[in-house]
Length: 326
Length: 246
Image (cartoon, rainbow over all chains, first blue to last red; front, top):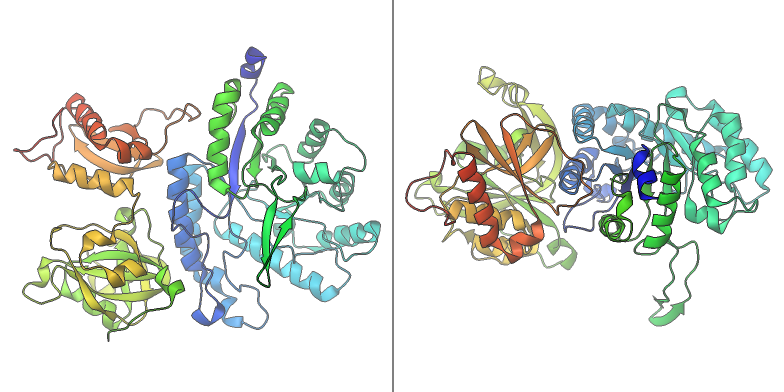
């Protein structure tokens, strides 16, 4: 097994989303309320500080905060609408820094982005949000690997209608926006088969979320097959990415109205750290199958700390993977 | 001008302490509302909620000399060339270099200025508003668990002249020391077998020191630095007299 693993060229980069927990005081974005005039320029300086941290930890895959440019598209706050233009130099500089450090950057706008919603106003707002995200990445001069992750969304009605609306709306987006989009399978609706359907009609690549796939896999597609299918939707010159997380298994105590309540773990909730053996199994399977190189966004509540711990665990329990995982 | 903060949320805000060694810069901060930091020599963390000013001995006999007496809320950052920042000094040798222009609110005077009784030479420092408002001496501003600061101070205490935040090829190093024909770059990180080997860098020799080791074995870290310096022909900046003991 070991020789076989080392012989092939599958490379896997681990990344984490948004918050840095490994050191105190590193902010992901300017979270001040509008009254205090938050600004993209402040977020970009926070991002620069995070990049220096990523360099020290040799982490080369990072998801930026969805609210990097605060209130950028808020319809009632026009004074925030020109932040990208106001920060053209700073955006270019942060893009240069990402390239120098070879950090892949991605975005994942909030749940309110719903291209498939029946309400045209909400769809219009979603399109605006995606255009802003694409403009941010364009402003940084980032290549096609810097993608914007979206969900199908939907408005609570039948899935086929929502999927159809998604495909029609996505195809109407400007080219520079659409080419940044990637589509994630859902954990309750819009499983792998559905997002593949959308991919065939829009060309938008599929991001496999392994936990979502376990939660909602009506076609009983084995995980490795799902991974192969998802990777095949990406253009040859763009490195695919997937999302990996482990389900919460611990009981939580919730406090509401001063009363404590025990909540049983729900399978779609993310755990603090990754289940090392499950992740190792997945990575080993990918390497053994000689899949193309891809990046792994670790969606764990402990963020970078979970990533660093997983690295240690890979070194301890699967040292044969070390040559493949960064 | 003095202002008391009691809001606990405000107290958790972050502060970047900058060193001001001339009156013009402080006057500009007060009247025009901005301060500048050269991008090339910027500290590891530039992002903060507040900017505080440590006024060096250059402020002479004024009571604010060698104290932090003023701070201000940070509003925005801009990246500008020196020529854009200071058009009246367009012929300056560093006119093309980029600077962070930090836009700030009105200067606030600390009710209790923070003195530097034991420190005479400060670099940028990151702290919290709570500490700034309560500290009596700059040593109280230091955040625990800052290996960079600990190693930096130890190198200086050993009469070396460390340089912060330099780029060695494509990668930043935390601390650089000048050696014969180049630099010794120190990276503070947790080394791991999973790292990609970096290729040889012109004029740079890289020494990795795990951050956790700085806290537990500072003397050992210094010995390692000293050993590397000996191998590389010694530090060009070391002052005679007190050397690191191997």
